[in-house]
Amino acid sequence: MMWKRIPGIKKFFGSLVLFCVSSNLLLLLYYPPKIFDNPCPLVVSWKKSQWSQYTRDGLPKSINCSFIYNRNHSSNIPSYKWCYRRDTITDYHYSKLASNCSMFLKHRNYNRHQVTSKEKKFPLAFSILMHTNVEQMERMLHAIYRPHNVYCIHVDAKSASSIHTAVQAIVKCLPNVFVASRVIPVHWAEFSVLEAEIICLEDLWKYKYWKYYINLAGTEFPLKTNLELVQVLKAYKGGNEIDGSPSHRPTAWTQYSWKREYWRTNTLKSPPPHGFTIAKGSTHIVASREFIDFALHDRKALDLINWMKDIRCPDEHFFQTLNINSHLGVPGAYTGNPDLRDGFYVRYKIWKSPGTMCHGKWVDFICVLGAGDLHKAVISKQFFLNKLNLDMDPIAYQCLEQWYNDRVQKGRNPDFDIGFYMSRKLVNNHI
Ligand SMILES: *[C@@H]1O[C@H](CO)[C@@H](O)[C@H](O)[C@H]1NC(C)=O
Ligand SMILES: *[C@@H]1O[C@H](CO)[C@@H](O)[C@H](O)[C@H]1NC(C)=O
Ligand SMILES: *[C@@H]1O[C@H](CO)[C@@H](O)[C@H](O)[C@H]1NC(C)=O
Image 1 (tube, rainbow, N blue to C red):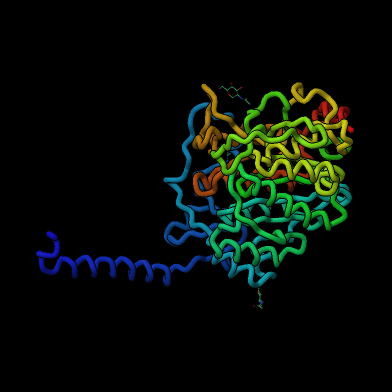
Image 2 (cartoon, rainbow, N blue to C red; image 1 turned 60 degrees about the horizontal axis):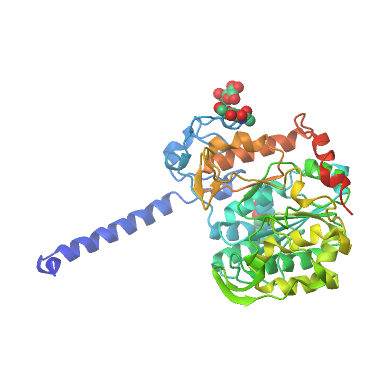
């Protein structure tokens, strides 16, 4: 080979590599992440010389969050990925910080919550399915965390051990947050997605006090405060907000037996048990405790789960089917025409369609939101948004956090229209 014949070149590259590695090590030693003396939120800059350009929240001073989320941006405002490098909080840092709980709670400011008696009397249960990015999950948890609610986190068994360790460390510091009693490898479109959620639900069920259940993924963020969620869910009077249509759905997904995400066999399935009418809808649900009781314990529901083990995307069919079969006595099930619903307010999502703007990035027909999309999201009626990527647009994420914290602080927000939710069809059209 060519380079072998030139004397010294190997040595040159060798010392170049050594130089790069050692100079980085020196930098690491000189500027260790400042996580332990930096107040919440967790933003660390390794470039000390640039500190003065950042606000206390770790945002570049030139960024005005209220400008970003208060304005309808018709032109593209850029994703800030390239002009603002924030340092991520690694799994290792989380493990280390949370190994001392008083330090973790103090630095992440978990003791800040003022909870009204109305909220205390109406606890919520959450499941969070995650597989990556502990920091993003923890920042979402930090937003939705209230001491009287209960939270189950399922970490994909396939995820790196550092992720498991970090999440375990975090939950040890929060008495009402736990990791699922069993974790499984989760594969999209397969039964394991529903199974992971059911493991969490069975764990959550042991806590007798909660009234409603909400499922989340690690890449979401609340658009309504806990108080607002409680107000809406009380107004639903036991009704579930679960999307699902029996007629507008890919029927092959449930007609045939499926092996993997894209592997449809030619084996036709038997008809569903107990005469269930099958529906498909969004995997995101908000359901009453009574509904979850039925889903976990009723014979008909258990037979349905069993039947769904080899369909495509059971997580988009199971709760959705239960909720339209009111004749089987499913608590909170919808009694109106499921094809003539008045919208779905559990998630804010931008689906790709001609002329639709996404200031972030289209990924699989869904917009991963950018800073320019925040305005529409924060004025929407939806409960949570999906999806945001901390690494892609850290400014969007942080501005949304700022918006949310302001909203929690204010307590009552005049733009929150409870009448809208009280007049939803599901309120008067459920068991
Ligand atoms: C941020 O933008 C808002 C307009 O949305 C403006 O009222 C406010 O003065 C700006 N703040 C700063 C510090 O420039
Ligand atoms: C934002 O602006 C676009 C056009 O510039 C308009 O079509 C849309 O209705 C506006 N949205 C809101 C929420 O004001
Ligand atoms: C935990 O951190 C606190 C400071 O927040 C310190 O006073 C305490 O000694 C630490 N505990 C342990 C066990 O290291």
